[in-house]
Image 1 (cartoon, rainbow, N blue to C red):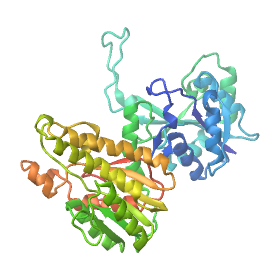
Image 2 (cartoon, rainbow, N blue to C red):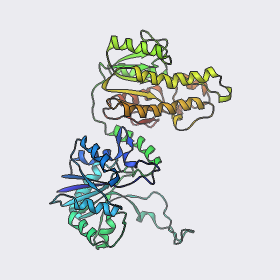
Image 3 (tube, one colour):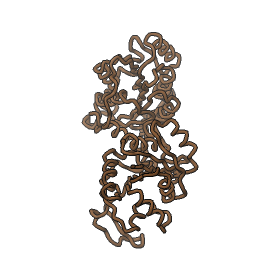
Image 4 (cartoon, helix red, strand yellow):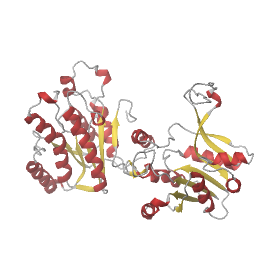
Length: 444
């Protein structure tokens, strides 16, 4: 019998949040649940145990009631070493091998898991490691360099760490250490050899807020590479708000190629024309669509207003217009559109959402607002798949007008953005995420 022991005893001290990092969402699911998925879906384990800090047991118990795979919850201790030992003691009778893994490493691949399972059966103890790409420096006093070792002889340890169950249990029982940060140390104290399993740079540990931001993008690329065939968009009714501009036109053409029915919504489109920044007009429009078309399969909000002006040069009317169109219009459309359960909302943000830009700080602020609105709405509407996309600068007529000095080769094409939207509309689980679209995105 092979068991998986997943440790999530962290309290979030380094993460800088009152909620530990394992409970933060990536693509609409808590990090630790993504990690559980990797183990449960691999089919390699006879038992999965989740060791949780006692403060969070009640929350995790609620989560696991709705989790589709059997997982045994174990109360952890004050240290990682104690939590690991308590998890080992809770393993089922007849456990022969155990893989110990960090709950905040959700990108562990099936290949790494399989290699660990096969390796531990041969060697009794294995550790997942990757080469060090940075120069290593040794300092005996932490003030000056004492030596620079050969980095080719040093590796960075990841998880899983895998062991013969009797061996790792004995190592814990005989250990005289306190607060060991990994289990390999305890096994080496017994004089046993530990063999290496190749890890991967993507098998990252989410420890800081910056890690979380990186994980969002890594997860989208990882999901895209392993995307399974999904339902066709043929016959789907998809409202495309702003379908007359460069990106919107490209999305419309891609939807038509997929056999979908795009409904173009804009001030000048027919038959569904309206100013979405006006609540009364938006309400009338979506009521009409509901009567004539029924519930939508998806809503894509790709409209927007841009001014290249410093704040002191903007009039009150210009400020109001940018906020009304870019933020209020998106909110109104999301509130008023009737969308089938399992349907999509995709809101266009901008690469400027993460940092305001000189000359268009109001625009940047509205796009940051779109991101926060989208993330919050995804939690309010769990029956829908709601995401924001943030394309880098794109070769549209608007971009050409305001930034004529840019090299067109540095811009995304509208069609490449449209391809990403089609890929996202075919997803069946991704929600609550902000997806950066760059020239090296995996669908083009």
